[in-house]
Structures are given as C-alpha cells and as structure tokens.
Length: 167
Image 1 (cartoon, rainbow, N blue to C red):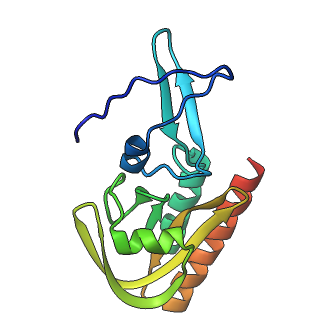
Image 2 (image 1 turned 45 degrees about the vertical axis):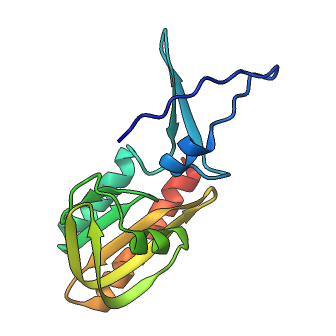
C-alpha cells in the first residue's frame, strides 16, 4: 500500500481536516468514530469499532462455538474479528460488505463470499449487530440445523448489543 502524505495547518479551535484521499483509503465516513492516541512525538488516529479488541465479546463468541459446536464468522464493518473457519483480520468482499453496511439479515441462504483469501460457500445465517452508535458488524453462523443456526445468530447479536450499549 502506498503511503499518502499531507501537511495541514491546525485552525484556532485545534482542528485539522483529514484529506479525502486518506478518508477514502481508510474507508472513513461522516459520523465514523476515531480513536486518538499519542506518545511523546506522534498522534495516531485510528478508525474505532466497539467490537475490536473487546475481549468480553470474543469470549461470548468462543462460548457459543464451544457449547453449540457451530461455525462462526464475527465481523466489524470491514474485517473478520473472530472466527473458527476463516482468518482473523481477513477483509470482507464487496458483496458481504454491502450486507454489513445495510444491516442485512440472511436466513438459510446458500451463498459464497470471500474473506481475505478464503472462499466460504454454504448456508449463510447472517444477523447484524446494531448498537446505539449504529451498525457495528455482523455475526454469521453455520450449522446443519438452519433454524438453530439463525436463532443462535440472533441470540449472539442481542447479547453483543446489550454488552456494547452498556459498556
């Protein structure tokens, strides 16, 4: 990936404008939340997600995998956060990204999507994760019993929504 470099002035209220090229590259949209961290020399802006690095949420997912013996893909708006079938950090393909951004649900749909370099074909049960801050991501559950898989996805989504809204 080619670095993009700009020099910007800070206005009298301490604001800077993040150039459009950078916002496009990082898929930062109006209303997105940024995390600001600093050290002695640098300021780091990172696109923020309530789901990223949230160990409670990942523990909830791990328990569902262990107890119900299901296959799960757990995503934020751009990447796989946790899964027992694809790689963590895999990017979402455009079609799946569209499902996430539209908070779409799928129940027992036979489809194929690409996560990073992993093509996953099968019966998809997708449930969005929507909190007070908006769309956070999706939970995908695969199981031989499709009603069971969808219901597990709904339950996980509701638990995560509760956890994220009160955290």
